[in-house]
Figure (tube, rainbow, N blue to C red):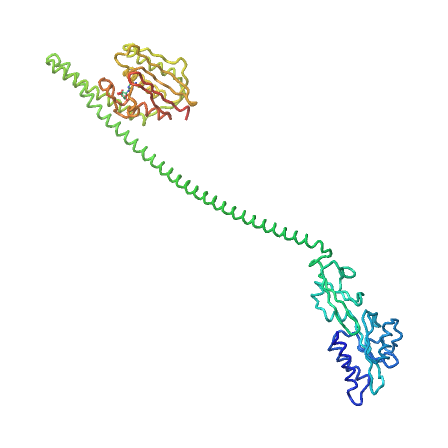
Length: 495
Ligand code: ADP
């Protein structure tokens, strides 16, 4: 601002520099133009004649003030400043006032004296808003409220004031601008939201903002953490699913392999059974021939044979009969896998009765008490084969009753165990050692006590087990030597 005021001084000095000085309007306009361009902030530069009339104005559009007398100005501060310049011949400055051209500003009067005579007055017109616009950066006006005070009076306020006047409570900065004859107070206050009015709210807002940002950061962290955990769990689950799939595939492959093995085994079994059948069948013919010729030999030459000869013949006949029994059992065994009748439900009672009636003689001979449960259920399967099972078990019970049993007894019945019907044949005969519980079901397996008896081939229980298993059941026993044996077996209810 001081530079702008000084420029008027330079203008005054230059004017009179030339000899003789040129006080023409043209020269005034040239000077005014130069200053106006070089120092933005001037509203107008006028030339006032010694009588106080505004003669020339620059810029020239400012014609409203031309030819007006300074005394027409209603403001006493203005006229007083002019009067003072006239009397003191020193530059003077008016206080802030409403200008001829409108707007708030101040004017300066610069007397131009040449050869002791006042030639006129250079009149600089400064509108405060214009000066501030030229001095203040635009960004600053967006972020700050700028107020300019002259002796406590607001002479400039940046656009969009926060509220009328500046507020002492608010954060603000101020500085004094010294100008000839006056001091301006410049106030800067941050605009909201940098610093909203009512500084008392600043701290809570700040704390609240901090808390919110902390909470948001925490939430974000938790979210990311959750996502990481979720991803981990998904990976783990996927891994497990893959592993399970692999295991399932391996299981399926094994199953397929097992099925093919079972098929292969079934084929081999069938082959073996056919082989056993044909061998047994082929062996049967020579045995029948041997037995036949032994009979014929005995018939024709028996009476001529010595006693030893007849005994040997008897051995041969027994062996042939035994061989016949063995072959019959083997044939029977091979038939189980190959031949089967239709399965059906039938009363177990009837079958037991039939079997028992076939064994009545043996039971009577040994004085055995037979106890058959009064009510027996219906069972499902091949009637003939189930009868075969019962016959084998009952004949074994009779066979292995033991010679000196004082009260031989056989019991046939059914009990319910784990929701299933279990058929049992119990005797109080010679019993079986625990070590042989499994073995006795193998083919040709006979226990030492049985070897003394001439009946039996060691195939009976093998046939029994095979029939039971073919009916979807299982067979087991409990036994104590010298106390007796109980055989248990189950059958499938239906297919
Ligand atoms: P076997 O023709 O010799 O009777 P099995 O296969 O029927 O052949 O029986 C195998 C063996 O099991 C018999 O030789 C016998 O030693 C034994 N055994 C079977 N049933 C009984 C039983 N009720 N009591 C004692 N031992 C038995």
